[in-house]
Length: 352
Image (cartoon, rainbow, N blue to C red; front, side, top):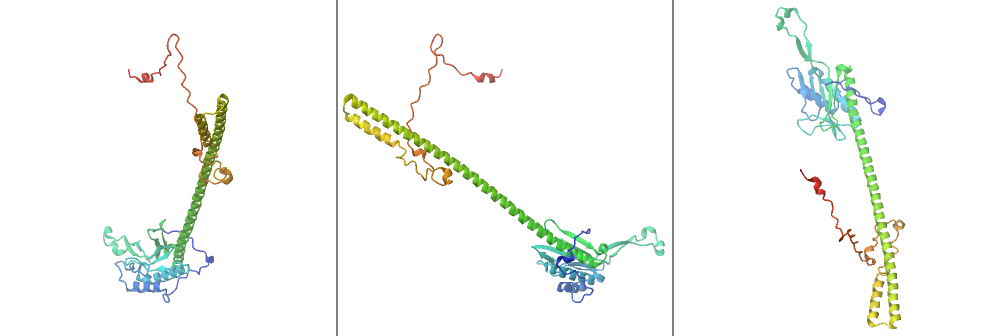
């Protein structure tokens, strides 16, 4: 795994410095348990001992000569991150190793001594055999550690990094880089979460602003519609009032005409006048309760769209005028009126 550059926390960040212990005495309980487990493990054919399914410690694969170095590195990393509020926790599943956890995100730690492939120098004994029988390379433990970290697959974006002692020059530099890498991972994760929260809040504010603007437009449309209805009611009331006055004048003229012609009204004429005046009285907008100073007020005065609409349908209406007859067709030059026929447009679409 290639090295990953990491910006380490500055010494003035308020955290104690990362210290790699020189001895294995007084180790952190997790590092001490790792030391015991490594010393009790059986080496593989390459001479390395493995601890990877022990839930309380990180995964480690090293030779006997690097057991103490791995335990000391584990101690320094765990103590430094604990001081930053990132504890090391045992795994909940039996086939996993322990991990660091903060902000509900886990980071696994692995310490490994890699196997190197080294070219074999030709010796005099080798020259006594055919050249194709010479061993060209040999594999052996590197004698230095590689520390890698890996966030669980649920992490977005994915996070993996590794630091080699051979590249950084010392195990202390590796330990400091690992602590900085894990701490930077959690800092960047927290910054992304804060940015996401801010983005969601801004989006929520935009939605609320858009809803408020939409509500204002709807209220304005309601006020405009209500204003149009009340204007229509006012016009209808004025028309009804004019119709009433016109009918009353007409009824008075009829009564005066009959009295002038015959001196006294007949019972039929008296009954007709009473009926006509009743009809005229029914045309009055005042009889329909119009105008009401609250219900029929100008919308701009109250600004309310919840008041009862004016009721132009309940207002009396002037009787419709009789329909005018359609004009007769003009007569032809020498005969009856010419009946014009529409042009047969279907002829244009005939297929020949």
